[in-house]
Structures are given as structure tokens and as C-alpha cells.
Image (cartoon, rainbow, N blue to C red; front, side, top):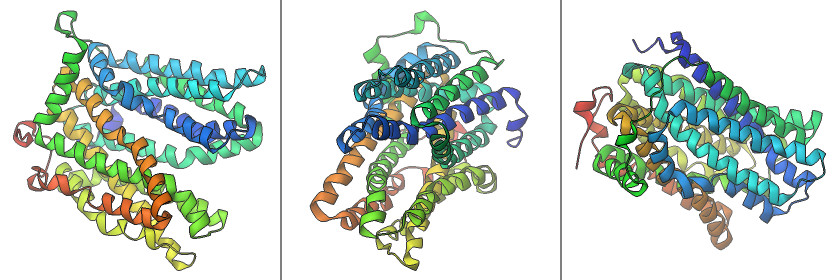
Length: 415
């Protein structure tokens, strides 16, 4: 049955670890730059550098991480990653109390914690098929997406309240506590987690080539990666310009601006809640295709946002992009976990993370350059046209002709 995933005690422990980790990480999304600005008086360039360092590790270590995860116990990788992040992030409030905190230290913490997060993410997606049966993968991935979206939506609000109560540096401690709680939940999982035998290990570069090669040979995996890379490149640029667009170009009041920025999180939450039902109703593949082809017309509403009733255009676009992305993530992860042999899954996940997440800092840079050259609203037109066309690679894949991903032998399409 696909509806019994919450009856699995080990999955509930895994889900709880996600809740603790994701909520803490989204609190720090607000608190870390506030520490830089409010405590260290950092300027825009330093805050931008701090933000980029949190995701830079995906470009630097994403491919090797997949190889190393395939060699190790996946649950242990996640636990060690959580404990490393606990130590690193926990050092920030301690250093602040001792008068030792600096922007240089914050940047080092952001880079190293981001590196630990890469290992956590790759091991996370690789471990789920060991916890749940293949027919439950879609439902399991949907539940995890609900947690991610809910944490993304509530984390900044919780973080803002904590900053008001205890200050920015002490709020960072909540992120550290979340990482520690995640490790503790993971430690209670009973399902065995066996590593590969030492005799099966190969040189690092060979492992990287195998992961990229497997991704390239599967036509649907290849087109999923291309579509997601285009989408993330475009959306990262939009996210980087959103506050500037609403505040300086549209000239909205701060209250309305903040409300509009939450609509993306609501869309992701609705997507996670509806993914299980949709996959059972129409099939996981059709759900993924539906999400890809439904969103393009809505992308073109956002640049038409004005300081009147047309402010709703921003909300509609944000909601639909996040809804589509969440459904797409559930479908893509389910397919990848279904067709990839377990001993290859870490390398394939690492390759996908490298290709798909590696476009995000590039997209943010591209958005800024476009805005400087042609203006913010015009830059949004260009970026969102790119997002509207992100589904095009999927036209050259088997996806439009599929219904479900759970019959791996039938849906794999090698070129």
C-alpha cells in the first residue's frame, strides 16, 4: 500500500530528524545574515559573500560527495554531518559571548557547514529507499517535501520572534540545537544500514565518471537534470531580485511585501500535501508532467506586478512555481530512487546535486547583472521566460508517455 508510510516507525524517526534539521536551518537563514548586519556591521558585499558560501560547496564537493557516500553507511554520514553542523554553528554564539566573533569566522562557518550539508543531502536521498518499500517512495518523498516547505515557511517567522526575544547571536543556537536533535532522531532508527564492501570501492575519479555516466545514459534522468538546472538558474535570479523589485520598483509597504514573500512557501506546502493524492490519482509520472506544463503561463504574471490589485500577480506566480517545483521534486526523486541501483544511488544523487544546485549561485549573479544592464522589471521578464521554458527538455524524454515510475524496467529509456 502507498498510504501506510506513516505507520513505519523508522520513517517517522527519519521524518522527525528532517523537521528538526530543516526548521533549524531555516531559522539560520534569517539569523545568520542578521548577526552579520546587526552585530558585525557587515556591508552588502559581505552579506552577499556570506550567502554564496552557504551553497558554494555544491559546486566544489558535490561530485566527490556522491562517491564517498556510496562507500559509507548513509545514516552515519547524516549523523556525523548533523554533529559537525552542531559544533560549527554552535561556535557562533559562544564566540559572540567571548567577544571573538568576526565576519571572517562567520564566512568560514558558512562554508564548512554548507559542506557538511552537501553530504547530508546526498546521503538523505540515498537512504530513503532502505527505509520504505518501493511503492511507498512517492508518499515518503511527499511527506519530506511537506516538512521542507513548512519549515521554509515558518522558520524565518520563528527566527524573527527569537531575535526579538534573545538577540541574533543566541538565535543561531536554535539552528545548532536542531542539528543535534536531528542526529539524535537518526540514532534511534532500527533499520540496518550496510556499507559497500571494501573490495567494491574504486578510485574517486572513476566513481565520479560512473555517476555522471549513469545519469547521462538514462534519457529521463538526463532531461530531468537539464530541466531542473534551467529552472533553478532562472528562479535563483528571480529570488535575488524579489525584495528589490517589490520595495524599490513596485514600492509596496513592508507588511504587504513580507506577506507576498510567504506565498512561495505556501505553494510548496500545498504541493507536498497534494503530491501523494495526485500520484495515486493520475500516476507519479503524469503528476510530474502536469506540474511541468501547468506553470509556464503563470510565470509571465510576476513582471506585471503593480502597487494595486495587480500585486496578486506576484503571489500567483510565486505560489505556482513553488507548487510545481515541489511536485517535480517528489516525482524526480521517486524515479531516481526507483531506477538507480542502490550501490550507485549516492553517486547519481551527487551528480544531480552538482548539476542542478550548482546553477543557483550563477542564477543569482546573472539576475544582478541583468538588472544592472536593463533594469529590474526587464530582468525579471527575461528570467521568468527562462523558467517558463524549463519544461522543454522534458519534451525530448519518455515522460509525456508515462503514467507511473514504479515499474522501473518499463520506464527506463536509454539513449
